[in-house]
Image (cartoon, rainbow, N blue to C red; front, side, top):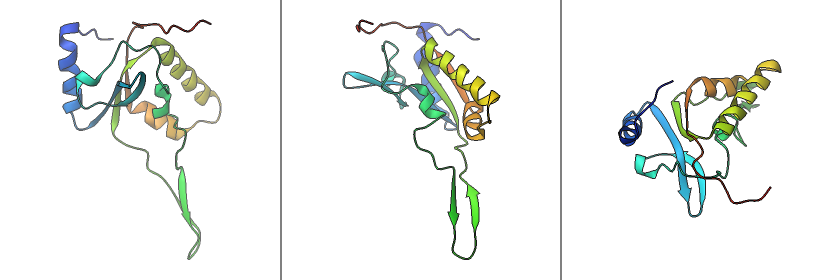
Length: 139
C-alpha cells in the first residue's frame, strides 16, 4: 500500500494519464450523476461522489462482450476475441465496490473460471478512496 499526499495527487494522476501504455479510468460527473470513464486530465476526476451509474465491475464483467466469432464459409473455424491488453488503472473506487470485486474474484475462482474476467483483473490496478459524500436516500 502506498500513501500519496493530497498536494501530490493531481500530479500523480496526470503522470498516469501521460503514460500511453495505461488506460486511466476515474469517476467523472455527467450532469448530476457520476460514472466511471476514461480520464483525460486529473481535473475531471471527482472523488466526492455518492454513487455511480454503473459500478467499476463493468470493466471486468461487461454487459456485452464478444467471446468468439466464426465463419461457416469454407468450413468451420473459430477464434477467440483478444482481450484488451492495455493495463488499466481505476481511480476513486469506494470500499464497498472493492469488496464486491474481491467477491467476484472468489466466485469465478471457485466455479468455472472465466479467463476473460481474470485477464482483465490481472491487467488492472485499483486505487480506492474513502467515501466523502453519502447519498440522501432513506433506506
